[in-house]
Image 1 (cartoon, protein in one colour):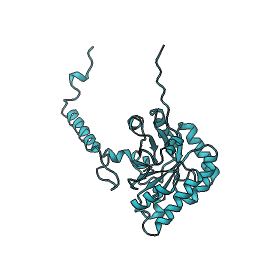
Image 2 (cartoon, protein in one colour):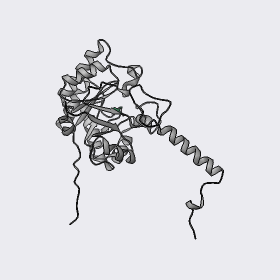
Image 3 (cartoon, rainbow, N blue to C red):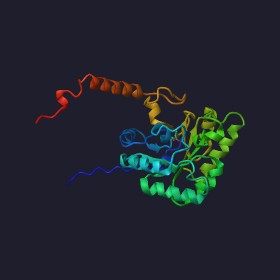
Image 4 (spheres, rainbow, N blue to C red):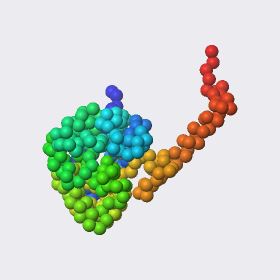
Length: 270
Ligand code: KIV
């Protein structure tokens, strides 16, 4: 009889059930090999629209399309087995109406197999969240610095200072009450991220938020040091893979020029 290992993938309700318990490690992933690695260590994988910048070299996330998200989402779902995979809804794919959001979220879920979607925005998105959740789409909210609104926010500034903290609290409560299982809190003061965590039912996932958040997320390229010239204050670099890759590519090109690669060991006999 063959032994069959059954691995149950985490669901949005599993992540919600972790509220107030052990902290939830989350990371982004956009490709098959990174998805498989992140899946071994994290409970939630976000196919973030940050891929517009990290993979495609776009100046912001505004130019990311639904087709890009679906292609990368499918690769990540296929090459992971235990983490909840959340796929970001790109700019312009959900803001127009709750019907537009449902149509595109259904496409993302059907074509990628992901377990939830993420969308940006606070109280003004609550009606859409309620509409999606009631129709079977688990939603992760995203407040604070919302990169898709970078043109309206006037840059990637810290959010929630002074009176702005009340707005963030109202946004978080509206999303949680509308049925979000979690809310990403990006680049805010630590105090408002901590306060939101104690006051809402949804899990909070911090990125430049607070150590008190229920979970933490970072862009995987940032922790791997892929962009030596761009290091957000909130991202810790755990490996310098960008420098290592540059060195390896340089060494390869040098050896090709010197005709020391390929060596006999890399060639085939008759
Ligand atoms: O797109 C993304 O990677 C994100 C995270 C930074 C939270 O939204």
